[in-house]
Image 1 (cartoon, rainbow, N blue to C red):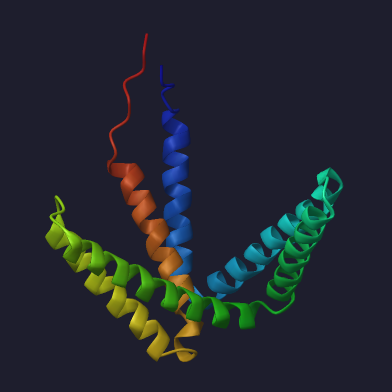
Image 2 (cartoon, rainbow, N blue to C red):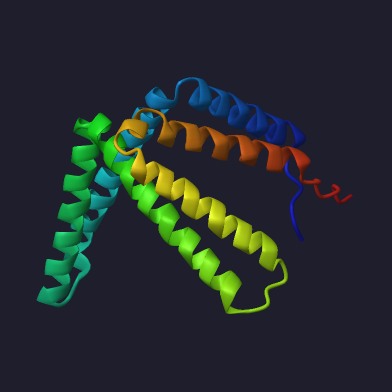
Length: 172
């Protein structure tokens, strides 16, 4: 039995997603910098959590790996938190490489066999590879706008998706 979501909560979520999308699209560098700081905070928490879990490991090797993992999370998180602009630049290159890799995998999937929507998979692969290549080719100059703009577009699509998805009827 699924619980029907509150209509007011749904509209509040849509409104917040739209506001976030507009802010990201209007202020892409500021939103990317905020995203970098937030990602740094999440990584710091993950690092602390990993370090706190060392005591639960029985073997020395497990303790060493847990400690190394925690230290890497903590150091990476601190670097993002303390140097958010450099983090945005690095994140832009990472996203470009990731998009090229994803696009090539989509192209390989389209070439490998008969998929239900083979043409769309092929188009997705081409567009994703092209966009990733453009991010890499224009890096680091595109770092000032790319991540914030991509984040804004993702939030906009999430809002539209939520807006256009039919709700389950309330059970009585």
